[in-house]
Image 1: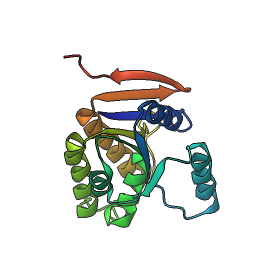
Image 2: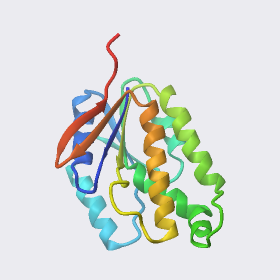
Image 3: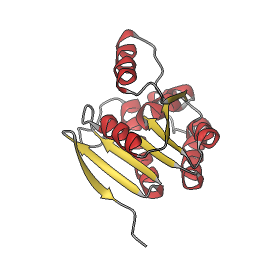
Image 4: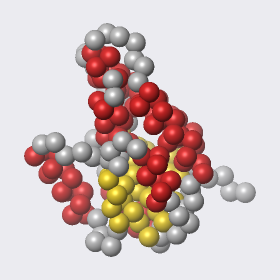
Amino acid sequence: MRELIIGGARSGKSVQAERRAHESGLRVVYVATAQVFDGEMERRVAHHRVRRPAEWGLVESPLNLAATLRQHAAPDVCLLVDCLTLWLSNLLFAGEAARQAEAGEAVDCPLFRDEVQALVDVLPQLPGRVILVSNEVGWSIVPMAAVSRLFADEQGRLNQRVAAVCEQVTLVAAGLPLVLKSPVAG
């Protein structure tokens, strides 16, 4: 089963995802997408690391998420991806998308386009359980900067595409989960 857990900053979405992974009874592999470039991000990563059980595996995947998931998925494994928001940001800045947006050009970034498509394509094929964490960023004001607008637009599109291929989608607000989509009993 694949589940997308979305919410705002500090909503409790990662804690909810960790709880679901633990409750799965499967071997958990934490797939981290963050890249540490400064002390503030280092503190955030350390905060997440302290909460995780020592027996959980860890794989870092800042760009090639679909390939990482394909490599580590197994019937007895729960992959916990935290988070799609940082992954998307990594893609936008690793390729030409951010530069193109800031220059007022049409955005055409093969790295971004191909990696997002690869993720959407691979998710339904993966054995075991996959829990993906992502931010809901579209409930705020429209950003002033072109690159920020591009990010907000693409994050919304990514969440929609991933939600479409997940059996369960959960929104977390104030630490409380609200199931938006659940598996249909057959």
